[in-house]
Length: 279
Image 1 (cartoon, one colour):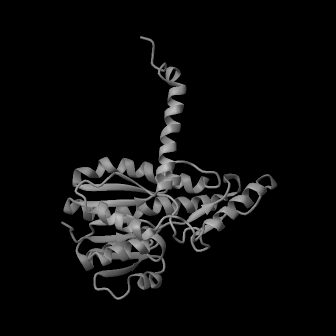
Image 2 (image 1 turned 90 degrees about the vertical axis):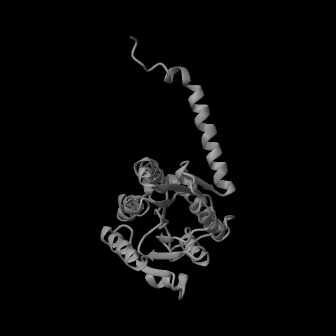
Image 3 (image 1 turned 120 degrees about the horizontal axis):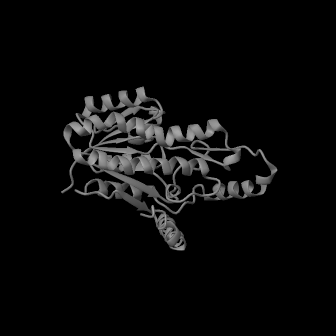
């Protein structure tokens, strides 16, 4: 039986966050829709008594604490947290600035940590909850021109995998979501920042990747509304998955990663197994 819950969604002003917020409201759930631009978030959820718009910059701890307080004051609890807020910093590692890399980590790693740290006391008290963090296919396998983004997503997954056994004792579930290419605003100017060309050695490959992303924008195969409904289904399960691979392309990335790991393990199994002391 479908249970009505309180959803707390970051980055709900556009893209995947907007799709999740609309789907949860349509299903009768109560939704705390957050974002740096509350006006944009308000347009997403419309005039709905089950919706609450709260301003939130996930990189600011004080914002996270205030947003959670507002959610509890309005709805009494938080059942599902969706760490979705994102920004893509693309470019070759050598050309990305330190500030760009730090900003990527702030948004995609520290941000979810800030919000989750604020939500956990609520979930611990009620001895239930579900933390869903949106990662990426780039959180499974590293890709050229994605070094900062992949670093942030790999870190997000390491944190989530470590968090899971820490909070399961309190009845709190965790799920990492690895979407492939979905038709959201991630590749638009609003959600993407690219390194400037610094070295001629990268010029040709940079031009190729910029052309690829421009071509992909608005033509991605994944439907964010279908992913949103999949998350509603997962959140309603008594034992939700610790990881959900979203999209046929993401499955391909995961399966290739598994195959590559197996090949590398087998190639050096004897040497790897010879590391123990000789007693």
